[in-house]
Length: 417
Image (cartoon, rainbow, N blue to C red; front, side, top):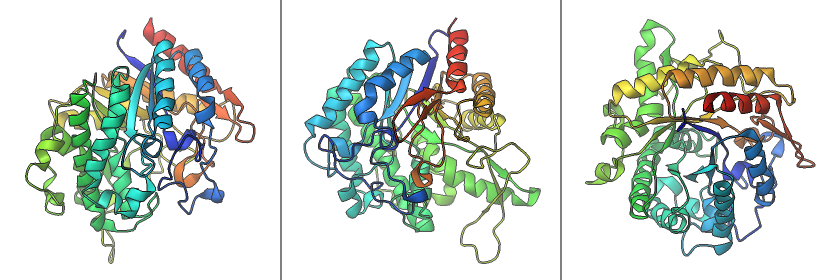
């Protein structure tokens, strides 16, 4: 397993803080409501100022890869125009430090923090955002492509569409239901445009990181409901990227133009799977405009978020991807983690990670990235959920490795022997 990537993942908005530092512009998440306890990410983990300390933590942990995201509003404060030099300089220093420490930089270009001005122009509902994203990608690639090992254009587009535009749980908080589907096509199109730009910049490897969930029917009579949900959550994004087609049930609802699928369907060097839990579905009740309803999965242990702990679902999902797409490139688990109560002795997290790491290895993946290195701002849940291998005291910014940190360090050492 000498080439296996043992990593951790974070995202810019969730850890950086420093909203007003270094020329950063506002994002759709800066003032999004409602968030638990009126929390904001204006400070978060203050990674913008404490990144050296966090790189040292990764060195102690022994990872050989770090997946982080670049904040679009730090590079283009309005989502357009020339690069903000201070923003590029920040990531340039971070990448240099990672390379010096022997940690491969794995850069995500978009982890949900759309520049606010672009959202005012329609955000991902506006086809033009794909062109803006290509411009942004070019600015970042020109500076960092010589050192970043792996590139992920867009993180979890399914959650942008479903939670941000369909049901309003995430920024920008729209409740469009099926009228949100154009955002899926524009996200996929932006991915394809970014791949073109990264290839022209001689990027070392380009892939994606999609959120996947096995869709389980509640009863034998609910298979159609589960299939409908699976198409929207899983295959609406995987299929066009991997085979140049959309699932038949939704293709007619998308604003596809001639040539779009050729842009979206670019060869990928790897495929990233973000997995947290399966989803159970039943047929909709009367008056429900959706073709499915979610059902509680209550026969498994649960995380602090209430998500069922089902390691076998990861293996199931990767198997389904390979069956549906036989030419699937090497697979990495680009996010795997859990929230649990605020304590240092976190045996429940160790148990979770142990089960999911074993499931990932059984699925013959090429790398495993724990979500997350640090406790962080957990979107609409604010600071109420803690995912970190490292505990963060948000009042003092003191970082304290949890027992799971030490467990993962030993797992890495054992796996790299």
